[in-house]
Image (cartoon, rainbow, N blue to C red; front, side):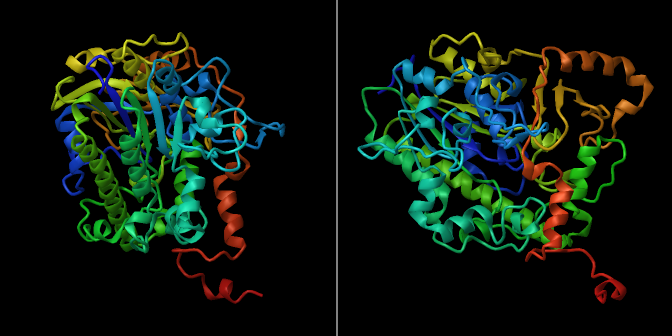
Length: 517
């Protein structure tokens, strides 16, 4: 058994879980009894943010305690620079992961599911989302990115999921009815269909099974760290029938403000709104899609409950610190956008809960400003393990008892926008975008971020102060271009011209277009 000074740790990460779509964060329709359970027995953070509203950079940030421009994994794996040169960017030399520090301190370190940081380990097989490796005698050939990150074992990665359930089930789970295109509305299950295969074949069910199996086969003489990387609730929002049917599309609460037309924001933000064309999507489809997301969140919460129950059944709960977070949020049609890729609150704000009954305060809410880069130094401090010099995050120990550790939070993004960086305090958000307009929002008076105050001279002094903050120490990297996302709407146009079998909610063209030859 672990001692009070060396607790076990289970880190549970959701993918694209909107903090707002959780019971303990105030949602009055979605049922998340198990995340709520963690909040009731721990500390819930109301002002937690991700270092980047994109999977790869955010995940490397939490595991290294550094900002994207510092650790170097500023976007997903890329093919070329803007200059046309070959581009392969990995985590910078000298920066290592939290998992490696725990392993070196005597922890058995196990992982299962979706990691993404493995793609940024030099020498990894970038074509396969990481090969993974297993406990026992079977090991893959070649470089092992999970071992490089510090894991003593890793199961249930993307490739092994396909091997376990087959190509047909895997395709349905990951990509719904079509190829994975964010603007193609089937990607968000606007048809409102449940997962058509057994619940046991959902990737998240297998990830949960693996975590419980690890608890039974671990070395009981060592404390353990287990990373549980769920893919849910990332699209296609296709939950098993018993969870999918819990939510009626006609009773999902207020509809988001999806029919927007902005003229005061950076061109890339406006381009992304145009990319989704939500003004053409029938309300019925949006309702079905949101209800499907709710069902997927509740299924995902059920998986978390299985882990909590498993710890309790094995007598490990009081010896185990559970941390729950998401890599970023989900816009869920708010402000005319889905997915993440922006600094709107729904994309950059995340759920974050620490829970260890008897060791940490219970039923506590913190409004301290925190970032996912703070997780590494906080966990190392709790375990009395030295924090590496390269770490930029803050130790959150003072926030456990109502304290504050920082006034400002930063986030940055390079994937399909021009290089941009956000600084946020408890009231104001400022965004610097290279070669475009800046943005300032008063979150107290304008929670939807609909009015860009950076056009008003009375805010000039505040803008100057926050511009100085956001640029301080920000080393803008040579931004790569992942060719697939070089121009969002150009990509969409080419697919439409190819005659692909997609949902096209636009009005039927006039006869003089339809009859053209």
